Image 1 (cartoon, rainbow, N blue to C red):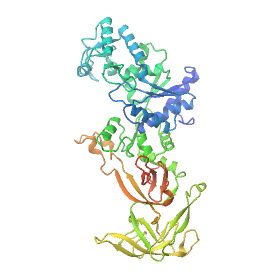
Image 2 (spheres, rainbow, N blue to C red):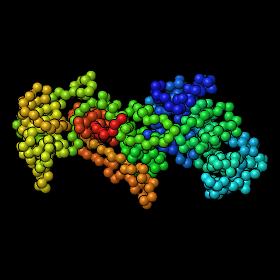
Image 3 (cartoon, helix red, strand yellow):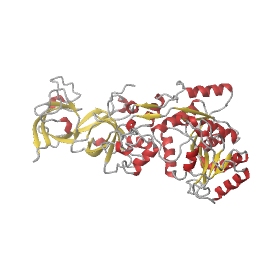
Image 4 (cartoon, rainbow, N blue to C red):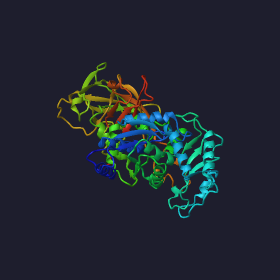
Length: 551
């Protein structure tokens, strides 16, 4: 967050501090460890940690681990790594499962107050009895069990005497409430499953809607900030805090979710992409997960800036993905070394350049940041250029290389295409050119002009590399639920990844994972930390150089 940027949540906090309602604010980021964090979670992270930083408060990282069937220590570890990578440190690390005993005791308190009962209805029956948005629900035939019977049954649930689904504990509120969330919601269910934190100690687990307000109250959270879909749950949140007689009373505040164009934000769907092999893991660079974006090459600074620039409001908003790309360009343009890479190579032989000669040319590492210094580029008789930079029969206003045309080699000389060499199938495999030694870059040559400048890599010292170019994984997420007979997986873009083999300058041979570069004309690239080896550099394109997006 930014102290100079106001929003309705900050206004609430300022009022609470000025009135003396709170002496210190406490926020929390409470993910369920059932998947990897995605870019939508980044907004909650930046918001919760940023607010605490702005007001000298505290932020807890808390895992809402109340469903052992979907949760795993792998997700716990990945979430901690993502939060740290984004640049935040939690004041306390907590698990909902650490409070299971207290939650159980609070449920017993509700039973003793006549505000909870054990129900034998099945999940389908509970759903049927619940009613609709326009019709009230009807009471379970087990709703009026005695307190003694409910206490006995709940203890037997804990002792493991019933199978999954045989019984649940429900809050007793109002089956005719216009808010469907207050129609005797389930607060405990039976699940004979091993928990990543508590092992086999428990076979009953609290429902999220019951556990969450208790966790906030136990931890002394002052402002429980969540996304707008929990707004209808707020009356039950407050009911739990009040009826469970919690000492602290957190305030739930909802804000609009962050969505991006052409981006899936459902953890269930992201898991489906992983499980069914459409991507090579949660950290696939096409995934909108924090780990995927890190592997692709996004910087934590760019993500934080992007999130801060998206308004904190009470309405969900869909933001153009190009806005996120804009901020990574802005972050990298002064940081990333400029260099040349040929990702679809075509060999060029300069026939009048001395055989065996190697010349070292000077070039700035980053012209926009002179403090980064200079680099040396080898130049010799044999080079690689991009296949796209040559056309045998070009259209008008094509200013790159073609037979008889002259172009400038970036940082080097003018060359002129004299001869085209083809294989037996008629494919162009080599160009034979001449160069003009009077046209060397940096010598002040003022003779004839050329309209085209192309990049290149000297062949003898070129370092082989793989380049991975990405397109959106989902072409139009807004059509995902359209009634067209297609499933979500039918929307997956089959051309979301293109892999090319080419070359980079020799000064990149010692590149390390996560090193970032701007390749002339191609864009910003990141050394892939997962598949790069000592024998093979693999680069992910983070973003192209230009966009039509206006901030």
